[in-house]
Length: 236
Image 1 (cartoon, rainbow, N blue to C red):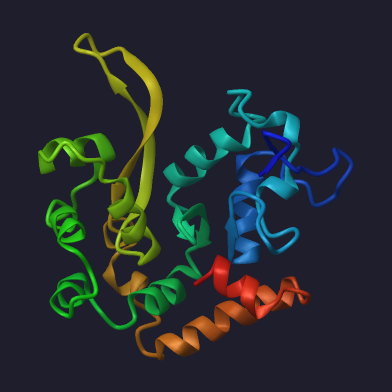
Image 2 (image 1 turned 90 degrees about the vertical axis):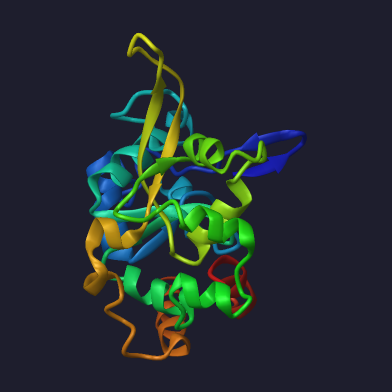
């Protein structure tokens, strides 16, 4: 999705494209086969959900057609990881490749040691202290619990980029009468809550640099013309 002539434009594929993603199950299967995939178009042509779906189907609200709705279904399935993993922008990781991203992005630190080393801010620490005992929270709940009046979104994005948090689900808020209202909001949790510590940290036996090289090689395998600069910008 790019800003062109004052408007945001989607760049989808043709209905006849044999590689077109057609439904939520197809999206999950595509991510599992590709390993990882940003949601929107970026510097590497073809490396997005957007470019493998029909532009006209986005934001229709139809869960059978709308890729924006599919992201919720895919996240809720827990068969793939969803979050802001690509330079602060949304996308998916397969459970096979999740440990490599965890190992590379965490760089050998659990969150407490990251904070003690001065590599995470006080805001991030406040948020992570909320995610004990398998907690899952919406961003609006996090804001209420922090009681600062400031949006936690920036810190939440950084924690997703470092793979300390992922999106567990999307849900609407409920009125006092129990009626859903407003836009669906992301609910966050640690990846360890969903898939277990051993699965999430399965790549800790190799160096973070080796994990990154495997990620890089996977991109080049599928997109051989991708430059190192583009790969670094999208998958830092």
